[in-house]
Amino acid sequence: MPALVNISYLTACALMIASIRSLASPQTARLGNFLGMTGMALAVIAAVISLKLPNYPLTLTVILSGAAIGVYTAFRIKITALPQMVAALNGLGGLAAACVALSEVLAFSPQNFNNTISLFVGGLTFSGSLVAFAKLQGFMPAHPLRFTGQYGLNAALALTILTLSIIFILQPNIPLFLILSLLILILGLLLLLPVGGADMPVAVSLLNGCSGWAAVGIGLSLSDSLLIIIGSIVGSGGLILAAIMMKAMNRSLLNIFTGSLGVQNSGTAAEAQTARSGAPEDAAFIMENANKIIIVPGFGMAAAQAQHTLKTMAFLLHNKYHAEVKFAIHPVAGRMPGHMNVLLAEAGIDYKDVYELTDINSEFSSADVAYVIGANDITNPAAKTDTSSPLYGMPILDVAEAKTVFFVKRSLGSGYAGIDNPLFYAPNTIMLYGDAKEVTEKIIKALES
Amino acid sequence: MDIWILLTIFLLACFVGYFAVLGVTPALHSPLMSVANAISGIIIIGALTSLADSLSIIDSFLSYLACFLAAINTAGGFAVSARMLTMFKSEKKQ
Image (cartoon, rainbow over all chains, first blue to last red; front, side, top):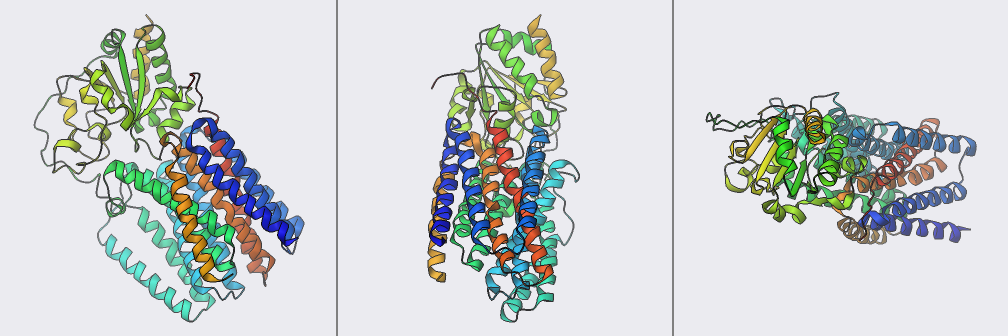
């Protein structure tokens, strides 16, 4: 019997690793998701059968009702609410780990060190994800929230937590553990406040990894290798993802958690440059005669929910005007890694027409039109040329190389980073002011006639 | 189990995670996060273990709560990624 349980755990482990591996390509990805589900179900069944649980009906009710709520919510929410859904789920995982750690301490577990680590990581994941959720959902302003003495307060709090943790590990007592829990939750809230909207892909990836590290802590505490293995895979995966995002923005962890972007005003206060603006009908005319069009979506497209309209436009340009239409995605466009890809896929755009930065950047020079919709900083040439710019060093999409660049924007305002984009004033740029969806709809109308 | 064996497992699994995630195509980073989210719900095994040797009512209540939350996390994570993945389609041949 124990052998059978161990075999089930091992199989579950292999299935879940294979599940991540299968995400290497869209063809195998759905199978991968299925493998993951099977692995998880196998592990839970083996655990329920092998452990001496006090109350089986209650346990099963709790698990099944949780699962039902999860599935129901996942299928009910709008596609545009996916980033906050991911953040919320993540937070629940963190809270679960913190609860297990607390329950272990109440059961006089001798694993004080591991339980403290689990409480710390799990608690931070929970309250941090809560703030991320509130920001993504719009319950809280998305820009960095800062106040004087913020970093001093954070540092003092972190130091207090460290001291109390050491005291707890040396002389365990339950009230102290409860105080620690509270302080950790507050620290999680405070840490996420200065993280701005465009830094969310990094923050969400990191939080995602943290729920894995919390599982590792519990695994070490319970001597459970399954928890350790899956936890460290999720944890290191989250770190890698965050590292990829940070590289794509040329930002450091310190930058992100101090919210250094978004408050800086560009020193060269508007040198009275004038940007050329045009009507959607003019844009339609230029696009009708274009051979190659590259569309660059950003968070503005997501905010306006313009992906379906964009698909119609691309379809018309391709089928009626025989243009080659491609989509270019910057790794940090949107609010979570791969955000734009999901939205374009939702609109029914063929994923083979959607390209990553490195694959398409050389093609802008041969494109007649670059249609930038709701993106700004990821196209800013200052990142290449201006060493004083906060964006300097960030890889950008070279839209300026295209013959004509259209910027669909609500106003001439600078992007999230609060930095002026010299591209707006370039001779080959035409600004199309308005809501991303409405402007695209007008272009479609003109293309149809 | 010996702590050193556990730490060895930990170390090796970190490398497995590193390479597994590095192989994921950037286009699927959102579903990847969701799957990672879902499997981090493996904490449910810890919750069940903790439930099995709980001593008091508060202790077992916390374990039940953890089971409940981890179940939402896991099921929700897989459902979200399933929903995202069904949208990735291509009519073109490789």
